[in-house]
Image (cartoon, rainbow, N blue to C red; front, side, top):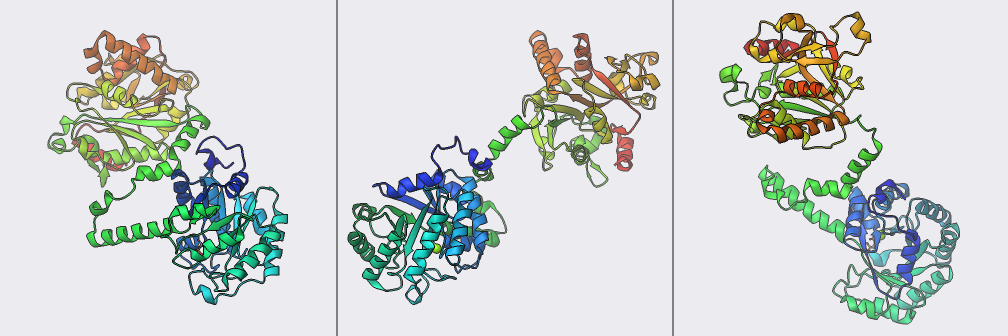
Length: 553
Ligand code: SPV
Ligand code: MG
């Protein structure tokens, strides 16, 4: 069974061919609905039909060509393979005339079986065929013996004995009458056809009912009431038909819907007029089986290798005055695009696409595409740790998390250096900290003391955080650049620590910055690995920084 079909649930024990044959042979009337691609086949299955009719008319229409064998048989095979992959119910292909002689038919049957198709219906016309509803009366019919040879060759080519070949009789369409239809039915039945399909272009069902009556159940009979659609369904049941095919109704439904929608959008130059009448994008994803892929990713992608970035951008950035009157700092323009756009690009360049931004002040202004958002509406009364833990409450739980600030730019290699660390928590520390010593007081809590200062030895040793706070110059080894990495286990440690801390002193958690978290982690025995860097980051605290950011990016 294909990967795609597995998405629909447990595999069925009987083969699709066997299930189709059971429908044909059952005394119950079965209904097939047309589909023309993987999506419509899945819709047919979800509607509860036991099998799909892969209609030649609908598939050719969906491909934008005529129902005259303009699509090659291998192109049809491709379409029907998508349909078989997308469903677990059996499919009967409308195989036109078998795309050639007995030899083409043999090859067709073998290929259909290998692609999970349960049955094929062939019609006794000549290749290239024309749809039966276009001048049907003028269409030449196949020689009976030649068509019987085709049926025999197909039956002998099948490897699953349950694969079905349905012989479609066009004698009524061509105006040759009931006797000719019955003569052909007899011959095709004798050649091994598993059922006959009696087609008619009349608006009443009289001639197919006459056929059913005369045929008297010698083999299953399939009907296509496209033209005699007013006949009540119980009539087909009473006349012992085996199957009814609703042959083209989904492609016609989609044509009407597409025409209506396209015309309305073209006229309105806006989407509001159509949005409510359309399937949601979420529904498209559901039909595609998107959730199965998410689950599979959890099972098959290496744990911890998936990375999520959390960017803390809830505060306003008052120090920039009028510039952040209505715009959060993260959305200030740097070289023609918002600061947050540059940050997102840095992550994306490192292959990290799962980006969550914690918003607070003027949150609606942070609206860049491709970002997930978590809102910290109480940003005035809480601090960074609260933003971070709100982000951790969302998203997948089992991945690596990088946290950084919405006002810090850094080079992508910082992420590479962090990703090489096996420690559960790692931080990037700039040894060039003296350059920022004369700046405002807000960065001073991020000065760090480590187990080893940066040196040749430190390059080969593991360096651990001792504390992160303002300290006498002699004790400072660097400055945290505002980028930290947590493994999935590291995130669990943070979650537990924050929960315990909150239970003990909620106000302390609300007032805690990231450095408070790091210090508490160290105090409770959790090692924080230090990765030394030199420069290559920029914290935007004032107008000068903003100007510098332009050249940084
Ligand atoms: C089809 O659906 O392509 C058929 C049925 O062959 S009909 O169009 O009625 O001929
Ligand atoms: Mg057809």
